[in-house]
Image: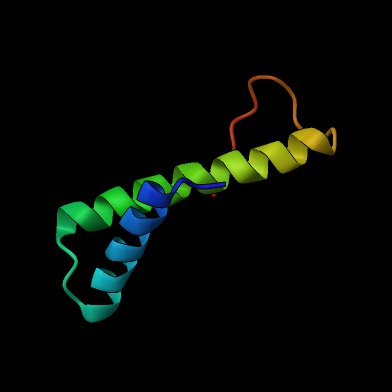
Length: 60
């Protein structure tokens, strides 16, 4: 679960992206953050299912 500050930050960045006001730096930051979040979620799901071994590298 994300804290309120994280939700507000992500919401602000996403709104700027929808409005076409996202800077290149903000876009890069959003991409990196979402990639890490997806890797964490996907890795945790696979780990719970027993499909992940220590040291596995996930590619998106």
